[in-house]
Structures are given as structure tokens and as C-alpha cells.
Length: 630
Image (cartoon, rainbow, N blue to C red):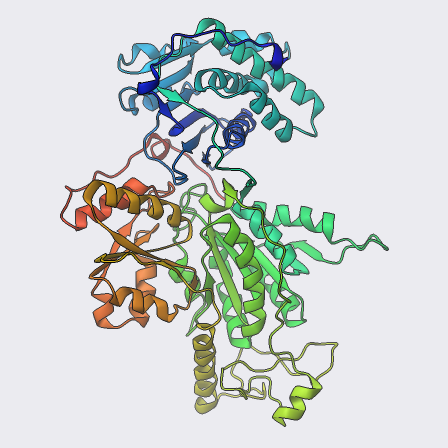
């Protein structure tokens, strides 16, 4: 048992030279080898120690056997963006081990599978050889099981080397395998064996240590997709139609679990919801629109290729004015692109999805908390404005674990928008499905099976009474009203979060998962170059007046985006004055890895003339050949 393992004294690095709670760990393994359990146990153990932590899973878009990397960052300062530099490498994959080691900076540490003999590659790193194959035989004689529990040995090794209490590891393992008693016993044995071997055979020679803090108390670890699913359930979703696609699949899969647990009628045992896995993304959105037209709160989730297929139905929903919520968990494109890499490449596409003149509402969550709250906001906005609402998350935010405060139970009633009632009809005198009686561009709708007159819903030309027409004046009046409705939405979408710094000549604008890198970058700019910055984080489109005011107050404004073509700046160019546009500069990151603070900082310093041209990042992850589809 763990409590019986005594820690022998090691000749350790002097306290003055230690790097405590401020380094990154990268585990390089093979996809399908069971490494995810070991990686999540390591992440949770550090989290349980009270140390701010984040984890990034870099996995191939193919079946088992290809390289995968999992990076954990511990930061006593609370920084949770990806860090470019790797400080502690666990090299378990023979195919990438050489390149992984050669990419490290001097002074870093490497735990490696002893037969790989990686210590012969360099003499400026600290190497820890571990005979994983010999050790795992002591855990189990079953060859298949040995392959699955082998990775847990490196958790035990790291626990001893990094100063993680083994009981914290075992507690994290218990949470991870709570329902798998046999697997729990085997993995616990592997964990303790790795700890014991390290204690008896390896001398601590690197400077990296973990020590308990109190910065994660009361917090949870959760993926963005799971948080969004919880928000959808709290929003009262009653119909889900979807087609699986990386990286959005886990959103609906998790939502299904929530619905089955919490939304079954207790008396009859029947579901109070409907979930349909459609034959493709086109059909999925078509079903959502049918449900939305009938009055259900309906949604789908997808990624870029699915958004492409949804273009025509998106135009129908916009023009026929049918509520729908569409989650786009963005990945790298165009086409199949890099299916398991992250990006913000669908922004401009979603804002105007469909042919003709369309303008869609976009929600831009930056945290798992906002994945939860904006899911609820999206349903309210979709019904209030009778239109599709796109929630733009991404792979990094959606599929990785993030720290969060426990979510609050919703404290406001559901907003169904303008549903016609007898009292309303008496007030307005005459009803037309597409008639604007309040001046906000939003008409009153009726729901089939409830009180109120019916109408024929069409995607072709129609007038205020929903009658077919090809009259030019009817068309322009309808399109002008839709534009007026979009303008009304500016007062209802989430406003940006603004942090003004007195005297700052430079402003930074970002959105979505870029947020955590920008927060860290602002500290780097101040500490390294004495550059003070203000910050505006966009949370929705259409833009609100705060955007223009922010730009006016600064000489130069850098817009940080994870795409090649500065798509958010494209949208700004459509709405801002020439004077405001002239102040905008772009900092772009689009190699498929989550944006890091150093890239943002260097991008700004270069354009400010305070640093030479930055070198592009070419990590090992991007040069491994991978093939895959959805």
C-alpha cells in the first residue's frame, strides 16, 4: 500500500536552485496505448495539490498506433495557456523519442524507456532511464493488460521525482477508474511500483519540484464540451439532432448522458426529450429547424465541415426566422484540414453563412464557465430574435480539461421571445407573421398546436403576412427589417469584458480560447519591455458600442486571432469607420496548436519595433505525417 512506501533521502537540488510549481511536462506516447488515464491522473493529482494546472491533449486524427502528446502546465502564477517550452519530457514512443529529446532546451529533464538509450543523444539534459517492460511484468502476466497499465508506471516515477504525494495520485486514480475495480487494482500496483523503483534506483538531479498550494480550492476540472452540454440541459433543450464529428462529438454524447440522468419523467420513466443521430449534418440541422418551428428548444453541434453542409438550412432559418442553436467546435481547415488541431477559422463563415445577405448572431465563449452560461444565453437569444445562434468554441476549449468554479444554477426564467397571445393581438390590432409592430425588427410568431393563427413558412419571397411574393418592394422591406432586427440584437448579446490601463497607448482585442494567452502576454509585455496594455475581450457578434470606444482610446490596437486571414478584423472592417480600422493590427496564430503567450508577446513586440522578427514554431507535433477524416 502507498502508506507503507517510505521515501528514502535523495541527494537533491539545493533549495535556492529549485523551480517550484512553474514548469511544463510533456508525455509522448502512442495513440491507443491507454496513456490518457495516466495523463489525467497526473493532471488531477497536481490540481488536488492546489497548484493551478492545465492539460493539452495532442492526438492524431487516425486509429491507434500514431504518436500522441499530452502537455501539462503547472503555474504558481495561475497561467493556464499552452507554454511553448517543454521542461520535463516523458519519452515513451520510440518513433518520436529522438526528435522530442533534440527539441528540448538545455537543463531540461527526460524520463525515458531504458532500451531507447536516449542519454547518448545529449549531455546537457538530465536523463532518468526506467525499464518499463521489466517492471510491468511484476504487475501482470497478461500481455494485453501490460500494455494498458504500463503507462501508469511513469506516473509513479513522476510522483517521486516531482514530489507529488502518492496518496494524491491514488485518490486521482480512484476518481478516474471508480467503476472499474479490477483496472483500479492493476493501475494502483503499477503506480506504486514506479514510485518504489524511482526511490530505490534514481537520484533526483533536475530542478523541477511541486509543492502544495491553496489556489484550486473549491474548483473543478471540466471540458468545455461537457460544460456546454450542462448549459444546454439547464436551458431546457428538448430536441437534439446531430452527426458525429471531431471535435464536437463529446458535446452531444455528454448531453445525452445528462438528459438520461436528469430529464426522464419520474412517474412514467419516459424521456422528456428527443435525441436523433442524423444521417449527416444537413439532415441534423433540418430536424432542428422543424423542431424549432414547432416551438421546441432545439440544437445541434458540429465542426467546420458540418458548418459547410449546413449553409442552405442556415439561410432558411435566417429568412424564415426559425430559432436554432448551433455549436461549432472549431478545428483546422480548409476541407478536412487537421481534424484534431484547434483554430478560430470559422468566424467569418458563420457570421454570414448561406448565400444572399445573411447576418448571424455569434457567441464567443473564452472559458468553460462561459461555455455553460453562453449555452443558456444562446437559446434565449435564438427565441427572442427567431434566428440561428452560433456558439463558436474550439477543440482546445472543448476537448481539454480546464479549472473552473462550480457553475451557478440558472436564476432567470427562460425567454421565449415574442409568441403571440390574445392580449398582444388585442393591443396590435392586426397580426402578420413578418410584421414589425414594435420597431425592433422582431415580429410575433405563433406555435402550431397552441393558440393563434397559422401561417405558411417559406424560404422564398414573402411579405409581412407570410404570403408569397416576388415584388421588389416587399423583398427590400423584409430584408431591411431583418437588418433592423440584427441592430436590435446589439443591445442584447453579451458585452465585451474591458480592462483599461491608465496611460496605455496600446490596446489588445481577443476572443475565445485566445483569452488565457493574452492575459499572460500582457504580464510579459509589462515585465520584459515596460509596455502597458489595455484589453477588450469580445464575447459576441454583432459588436456593441464598447468596441469603438475602446479603439478610440488607444493609438494602436492588436487583434489576436487563431486563423490566417484575420477574420474578426474582416467583420470589424464592415462595421467600423476608416479612422478606427486604421488603428487595427493583427497578431495571427494558425499552426493548429493552442496559441501561447510568447507568440502573442513576440508578435506585438516585433510590430512595435522592440524585437527582431520572431521565428515560426515548428514543433515535432506538426511534422509527423498523419492521415484522417472526420
